[in-house]
Length: 262
Picture 1 (tube, rainbow, N blue to C red):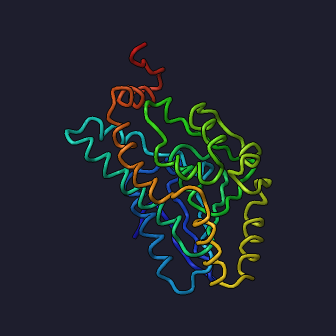
Picture 2 (spheres, one colour; picture 1 turned 60 degrees about the vertical axis):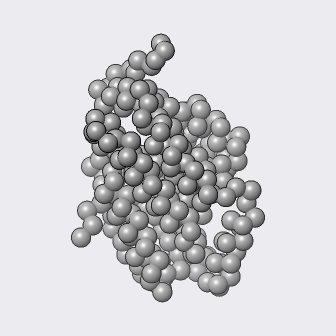
């Protein structure tokens, strides 16, 4: 039985729920593998018409599990392990992005770092007014390489540049102006709004929706899947730097990082 995800399908709606609330749904390798397996399970179901990604707890996803990343840094084959982690995450983002049905992310709370990649892989994002978005990787000495292709695909290079370089917290209301999320509702209304969108989608032809989704991606200026493949190496190499080691250690030790050169 999966430990970190819940998967179900009902009336054509496949739901994958992140279920590690005690760790703010931080993404360790096993968690990512379970997300990928859950997507494959839903995609194989002939009744699937809509995919919904949501999460348990007050935080949608806090990004990668930095304690596990620190273990990689201390291991003898850290580079190989980071390459493997990046590959698994890229495959998971691609699996969501490639789903032939409309996909919705229901974001009830904060989304940080790699978690932003999960929601950007979805076609439609609905956010609670308690949600915010943040890409703090440079503060930790690493990069948001895996998120970058999807972010540029969804919002363009202008807003993407601001988010990736400033590391600032972006409230849901501001994220809507970027096009990062498509609707912001009161926290208690999130489920109802998602159900409204699901119902609207289900009135459409399954084949027409699949063709439309593929045509949208074909018309986009970026090749997200190709860019994700390139990002695997960038992500792994960025984690191997001295600044990456210092940033992860500083975060876990709750202190300010000492960058080199100072």
